[in-house]
Every structure is written in C-alpha cells, then in structure tokens.
Image 1 (cartoon, one colour):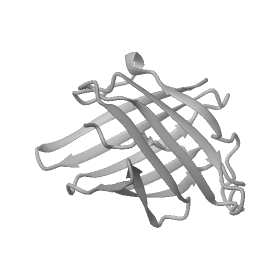
Image 2 (cartoon, helix red, strand yellow; image 1 turned 30 degrees about the horizontal axis):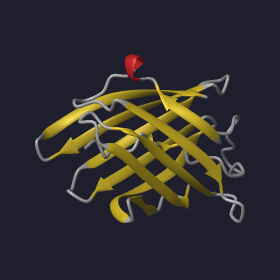
Image 3 (cartoon, helix red, strand yellow; image 1 turned 90 degrees about the vertical axis):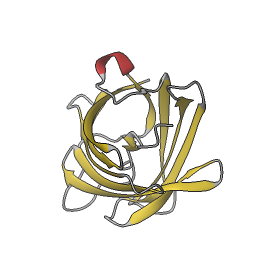
Length: 159
C-alpha cells in the first residue's frame, strides 16, 4: 500500500490564514485529484487519489485534509491529517490507526515543505509548489525505504 502522503498530500496543509512572514498567494482549500498520467510514481502507483482540504475554524495555522482513492492493488486509500503548518510532526491516520507522522512548514509564497516518517521507518522529504494560477500543484518527493531510495513527482489538479 502506498502510504506516502501525497505529501500532500498531503502537503496541502496551508489552507489556514497566511503566515505573517511568508503568506501563500493562493489558498489550497478545496478538492484536488491526482493526475496519474502526468505524474512519475513509484510502483505500484495508485489507481486514483482525491484530496479534500479544509482550513481549521479555530486556528489560523491548522488544517484538516483527507485523501481517498484506490491503491495500485485495488485496495481503498483512506488517510487523514489534522495538524498545523509549524514544523512539528502530527499524526496521519488511516482507519483509526496512526500510519505516519508528518511535519509541514511554509518554505515560500507558494511552497510548502514536509518531512514524513511512516510507522515502518520509511522517511519522505517533499516539496509542494502551487501553480501561479492556483489550479494545480506539484509535489516532489524523495523516499528512503528499507528496500532503497527513490524520487517521485505528483501532479494534482483542482476539481
């Protein structure tokens, strides 16, 4: 099962109010679909992934997101994040169990960086860059797993 969050996957956490030092020029709230055909993914690639991002109603640097879809083996993907964009690690949950911890931080006006640690020890470093028009974003990941390291690129389009 592909657990690295579309670090987005995931990395789509900057939907709260902009930070004073590095405001995002476009918000990431909404629904996003992974464009598998335009992405360069490590096998087995997912069959589909959709991310829904909501800003927190109580905290300007917090966010909530959920990723659903089907993995490369036909099994459902169900991931959620409820944390902050503050460089600290927060849990990523799947079906009520923690599957990873991820730390998000703003690294530019349209960019976020993340560090993720999966429960099996795999680490993921990622950068999310929002397109100037706000209609897509790219996630570049470097994954270090027990069986080796690899890079992948995810392209996400707003629904």
